[in-house]
Amino acid sequence: MKLEMLDVSVFIAYVIGLLIIALWISKEEKQEGKNTEDYFLAGKALPWWAIGASLIASNISAEQIIGMSGSGYAIGLAIASYEWMAAITLIIVGKYLLPIFLKNKIFTMPQYLEQRFDTNVKTTLALFWLAVYIFVNLTAVLWLGGLAIETVAGVDWMFGMIFLAVFSIAYSLYGGLKAVAYTDILQVVLLVFGGLLLSYLALNAVSDGQGVIAGFSILTEQMPSHFDMILSADNEHYMSLPGISVLVGGLWVMNFSYWGFNQYIIQRALAAKNINEAQKGIAFAAFLKLLMPIIVVLPGIAAVVLYPQLTSPDLAYPSMMALMPVGLKGLVFAALVAAIVSSLASMTNSISTIFTMDIYAKIVPEKSQRHYVQIGRMSALIALAIALVVAQPLLGEFDQAFQYIQEFTGFFTPGIVVIFMLGMFWRNANSKGALAAAIGSAVFSLIFKILWPGLPFMDRVGLVFVLCLFSCVVVSLLTTEKQKNTCVNIQEVSFDTKTTFNISAVMIIVILIILYATWW
Image 1 (spheres, one colour):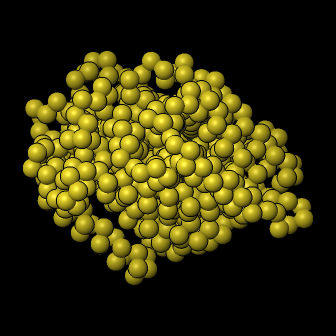
Image 2 (cartoon, helix red, strand yellow; image 1 turned 180 degrees about the horizontal axis):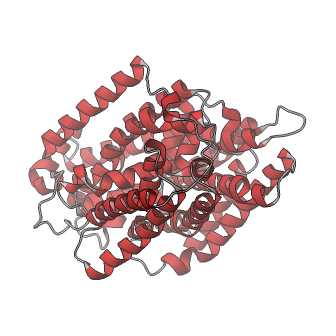
Image 3 (tube, helix red, strand yellow; image 1 turned 45 degrees about the horizontal axis):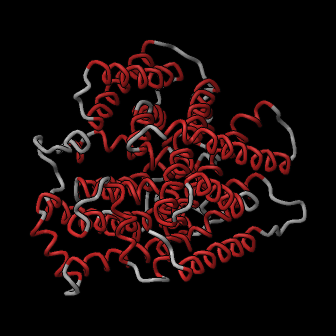
């Protein structure tokens, strides 16, 4: 599929407009320039709407849009559990985890681990996150983004990757998190509008112009199996979504790791004006997560009817874009690129934050704030350069890059969740127990993968989590360790939430119950 001149013009207008907005937001109001709080945490002044929009823009990228549409084509609505279960996870994070982080006034997740445990735990996890963000997340987003641009616009994937890297640098490197968060508002509006428009056109096409309701009815009648939320054991995709485990198993561990302890996600909430703004922003993001399956999964399901002979499920979303009229096609392409560059900008900003504040500042202390900001910018550039070089060698042989991400991070996710959960809510957890959970997570995962290859990935994550939990508890109880815990006592943290947050939580729970009861 090729873009017409009008589509290209719309896309160029979007790129220029975004750069102008980013530069205006990034202008320095202080003569001495930005300090670390300004650059890495947007001066701790983000309002709720910027937090919520930025959370979603950071989360939704090429692997979600193209990958989940492809899963919608192959599996159906069941893949939406990743989005809908994330909504309730966000509510739990906002009520019980975020108050602890904000009370401790941290910049990074490793910083909290240093306060709670010791430098060894902090450094171990900081190095792990840097490796994952550069060699897994950043490379995957660049690679899939380059392939998406090649599919839609006909531009070689390498040039597409270079464009994405340069574009994300152009609007985020100078302004830091503030530029990323506020431009994410435009990105999310474009993403939601373009996605809903594509879903409307898809359903209308399925019904031959009879409307979206008729189109949806046709889909449910012709493909009832594509609307099963809980897959049975005899389903060919059971290994990917193992039945009831989606509701009570390893998906919870993966969600808490991603939404609660993932630097490039939680950093937006850490930059809030106050706890109330942060919680309102998280509730806003939770509602947007409920909407995402309509935007990314539904077009994939519709593509089964409209394009039944696709050679690969991941071609579903690019193929559906052919339904868009000239001009609007450029807008939807801009929305796709918006999602990609927003994720890239978020990841590079978090890489620079962890490297600068948790590694470099400890090795080279007592430098000026301006110096650390410059180091942060340099580390972001280097990270993107590394990702550009290694993306094709690492991911070129994988049929599904999304699977590569899940497999690699899934080796460490259970241990990370155990370390944070016990560190926050069990006073007897110590650094030896934390390291036992971190090491055990990789060892147990590898053993299960080799000796029990038929175990679904999601179930493996759940079992490894239980083993890591046991390991951390046993090692902590068997070792006596004097350590200086500088964290705020949990009894000093208020978990009370405003009425608006409580109402939002109830609404989200009710909506989820209705959705699962309807499509069970």
